[in-house]
Image (cartoon, rainbow, N blue to C red; front, side, top):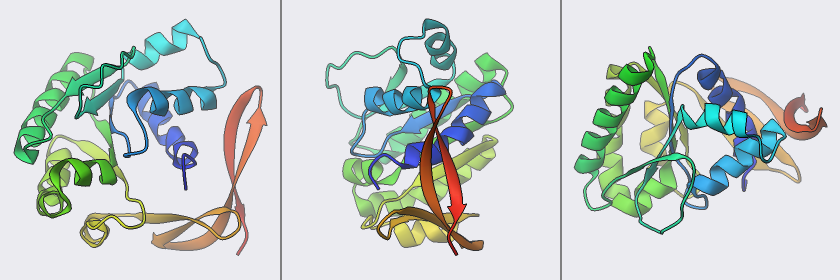
Length: 204
């Protein structure tokens, strides 16, 4: 589905940030910190708004598995891609420290599964993802997972998920619920006051 997923998760991200809760992000393999935030900023409808960037800097945190030399204005936590146990340790420490610093009751973890599978291997990730999700709950957080078609841990993730939605393309991008079951909705992007917004149009 390319980058359309950003329009669907943005309201969730925005809701957490508005309440002063941090958002931790592992972008999907096709994205980087800069690219992900460029999409987010395009939805906001502004390009160089220092006040909004300053506010978002306080609440957005990215895990980076490679040292590409790319410089961004966003918070990045460098983690080893050699050990998923090390990632789990750094994740717990970072979340605990950040939520305490912000006085936040909860947090959001947006997880691009293909990135984790690439870094740690599908088998290792499938074995560890249950513990990672459990740890998120123990830390009073919520995990939103993006699993593209073809990821090997999809069955494991489906069993772990409390809700499961599918984005697809049937000549137009659509969204529907697997659990709970929902109608099929067309994903329609519109401009409103200079900003992009998404509407879901019932087509079934």
